[in-house]
Amino acid sequence: EKDEWFARRMQELDAVEEELRALLRALEYSQRQRRELSIAHGELGEAYLKMAGQELSKSLSNGLTDMGSLQQKLKVLQSRQGVADFAEFQLTTDEYIRLIASVRTAFTARGRAYGLWQNSLADLMKRRKILEGYVQYPNRASPERLSQLKAEIARAEIRTEGNRNAFDDVSQILKHEVARFDASRVRDFQAAIEAYLTSLIDTQEEIVTLWEAYLVSLRNTDPTESRQLSS
Image 1 (tube, rainbow, N blue to C red):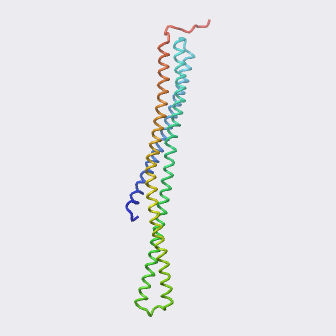
Image 2: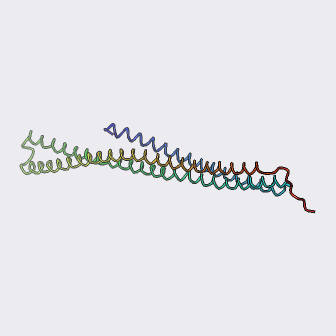
Image 3: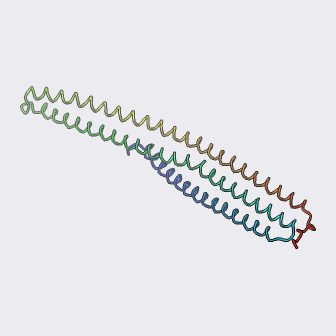
């Protein structure tokens, strides 16, 4: 790569892709942790409900039952949050990993365009050198051959100019697309973070509401109330 801008951007894209893949792995790990936390809430809820069934104190039995129900609700909330955590970032991260692959393909296409330009330029220079030899030693070529060679050089010049223009066009388009990629990446990840935080706050507020309601219920329970034993 002769252009320092493209060389630097390719290195940056490689680094961004590596970071995105690391983020994806972290999100998958976070989802597993959420899933395990959800399962733990469910198992804890079942344990409380079983204890409530064995407790002779009515007030304590009710408290354990409420705690078991609370844990079951927390299980659902954690499971839902785990899906939300992964969904918000997974789609954005996956999309940009694919986009980087597309940008890399575009870089490769630019490399091919550069190769076509250089090949046609080398062919043009070769023909010009042959013509110079014929001009220097006129007896080596007939007038027809000179005429043919000049026509070939004219076509090679057109081809070389076209390939150079194509390479320049690809380079400019690629610079524009990379700049748009950068701007979109910042905007889309900011939106994903905002959506994630909003979802997280909503979940935490629901959790706090559940705990506060349970605490109020617990404080209003008469500890002296006992379950009547059946004869």
